[in-house]
Length: 218
Ligand code: DC
Image 1 (cartoon, helix red, strand yellow):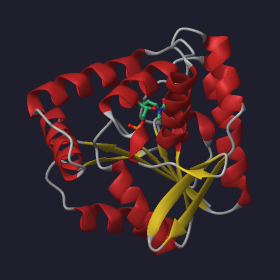
Image 2 (image 1 turned 90 degrees about the vertical axis):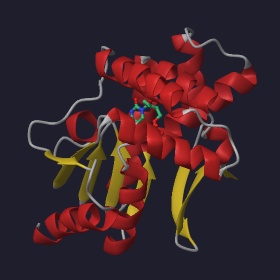
Image 3 (image 1 turned 180 degrees about the vertical axis):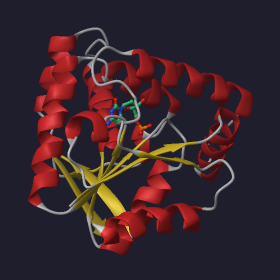
């Protein structure tokens, strides 16, 4: 079974997807982490964000794995654990730019389908219900106001000891959403048959039980 959880940055996808996957006993494929890993590796290698061919090569050279360890979803790339180094503002921005290249999307799409076909999975991202698994049994599109999303991101950054200015983060989130929505290939979009859940004033428990409930009815 595939549970697709899509939506813009900061809508609560990661928290919700972790809990849903744990409750259902499914694998959790954090597709944003895969785009972030490509961005991080490209920055490390000095590959330009405009070099589609070079970025595609980087994406194809990465082998991904996801597994729950001590209750937390751990992402691995070429055997190494991906940590907070892929969660900085810089990597977020570069990931959004890198993800516009069809060469990168194609390489990651293949990896996402391979992993999702191997076992029941929750996938969180932007184009899971529309492109990666259009036949997913459960499709959810999470949204929240941009102020609420910026406040959540700020709280996450502060927790990691980074500086956070909510106004600036909101501007950055809005710019990133616009880029993700306006790109030509697999843009951020709600699938016609996805259920939209606005998490602005909903608790995590309610969102999780709504999704788990749907999955159990399938
Ligand atoms: O979910 P996230 O913030 O970790 O994602 C980082 C970037 O990766 C996001 O700005 C757009 C891109 N992305 C994508 O294009 N498609 C996905 N399925 C997941 C993420």
